[in-house]
Amino acid sequence: MPDHISLNRQGHHPAGSFFSARVDDALKARFIKAAAAFLSGAGLFLIALTLIPFQGSFEVDPNSGNEGNIINQVGYLALGVIYLFAMLMIVERRTLMRTLSPTWVLIFAIAFLSCLQSYDPTASARGLMLSLVAMILVAGVLVLPRSEEDFINAGANAILLLILIDYAVLLVAPDLAKHTMSGGEPWHAGFWKGHLLHKNVTAPVFSVLCVFGIYCFRGGAKIRGALIAILAMNFVLHTGSKTTIGFLPIAIALVLGGRAVAKPGLMILSHFLFTILIFGLTLGTIYSDHLLALTTALLEDPTYTGRDSIWRFATASIPDHLWGGHGYASFWLSPVIRGLEADFEADWDVRGIVSGHNSYLDAVLTFGLPGGIAIVLLLFVKPFYDYIRADRQPSSRHFADFCIMVVIFMTYNGMMESFLLNRADPMWLLTAVAVFGLGLAARLGVRATPS
Image 1 (cartoon, rainbow, N blue to C red):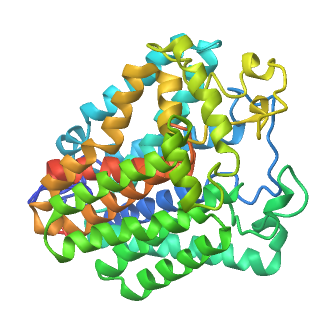
Image 2: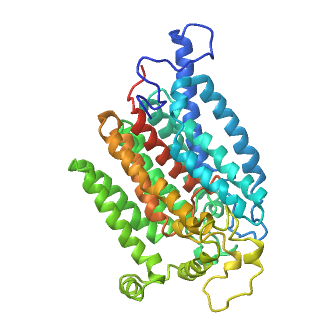
Image 3: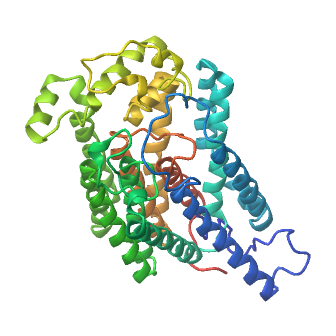
């Protein structure tokens, strides 16, 4: 979000060659400004909403594998075309080129190379292409608006509308927005899931929306920001996701506390210490009896609803493909896994598990040890370097705080859920918005008001 949210340098106008008239024409400039802001807000709305909201009861499709969803495939392809066209027409070409990042080139290079390890490389590559196309939408959300003010106003309107829709559905059609006794997990009955398929996705997504509300409040949209933060937080509380309810306040307190004492380095150090602690109390419990004993003493359920059995199975499967990985979307629900004999001693039948419920474990499982470590570093460590660079520019600080708050929260959430490069998963796309946004803010800065 350099020099302003659309990344345009001071003194340059983003109209490009879209109009043959003079770029200082007031009417056309207002139209471009309004269209860019609308597209940004609409993109953020769609990222959080998904293209298939309110699907009803959660059921795992054991035959889904790599096939994907035709609505997502066609829908995101169309959105990719629209947002790419809009960026080419509205954003100055030189500025648009500067948004290209070696970080993201490397991430997708590793991911596409992993497809060669898949049992069906073509299907894996198709699934990964959806993730790549969805990144066009992520970029458009950030580079299209003429200023941070436009970004905040458009985003606040879009996200507040989304949250109000969810609350309205809770009132008029609660079975669509809550878990019920039907479906594969009747024990979740009564927990809110809103427009998403499962509460374990809803809780982190609404946590990010809460963080966005705080950003809007700090950025000038105080009433809308406060409403977003309060309503989203209340939604998180009703999902029943205890880990998310614990992670969110930590992420908020770390960033706002670091800002209050003007010591971003202290915030970063505290975050990495918390990360080590959370890793030890989650994934670490399957490797160390001492950590398991500590977790058992601290928590009511040290298995995290049986996730530990999934982690053990995933860990045991890594050495078979240590360097190259099993390939993108080519392990869970694959014919190899579905063909295994049932393990009646395990808490979960891995033959029907859609992910390892740990982003870091799945990264190594999918991309191999070198590739998995590289992707984790690029997504969860490098953003702190970008944050320090963006923090040197006062106009970038509110946006940088928002992005790093999301990164911190998703770092913790990744201990319990898998979402990295997961096609159009809103957890992944919102994480991508934060990581991509921090990179832009570090390189180009943020302009608060349009020129």
